Length: 263
Image (cartoon, rainbow, N blue to C red; front, side):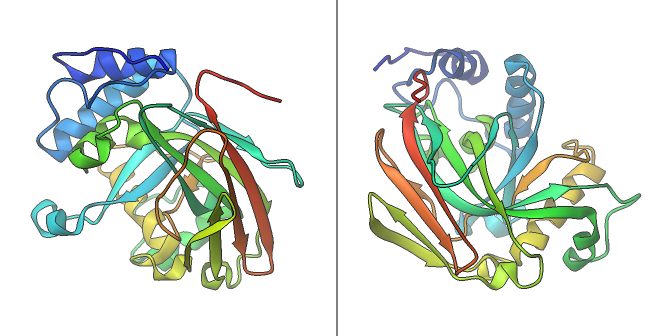
């Protein structure tokens, strides 16, 4: 395991760590103190990584800060995605020595953007052409990144380290499916997408609001990881995760070190 030292501006250190697949001893430099500063760091880090934005993840703001910040969600760019096929587990790349978790989510593919922000979350449905079962890999080089939520999480590209996109689900009723997540064959969480704040369409509406305010840029073809259904589940290298979406889909992945690629 490689651990980098750090001081000063967080962005260069997060960039170096992500490029090296290495852990940091702690969140580097000064943690942003406002949402605007955190998103500014995110934009700088995304640009420096130089990869196309394939989608957006949606996370939650800590409850004690919701009223103060005036929002209950946060966003981060997706820079890696892979398709899950059959029974073969997907590879969830994590920073060994950093923070690493699996989140089971509905993945929405954005087919088009409306000319203006839809009036309600439900009005965003017509902008999506596919809904799939999937995993978000939530991993950061900084082991204490959650201690600096939401600012540290936002700054480090939403701590997204890829999406694993599984089989397509029928739109009708998919958010009511009971989802079960297992890590190393032990049940770690259950839940339904419709019970997470105002559901997946609320997550998409939140992202569209950011887009129309000029804070992020959505585009047709991007995937939206619409929020952790069963929780944020820590995972170690070599551990497997399985998620069941009722009787409609089952998906698998295995955690591998970020710097390693196994067949």
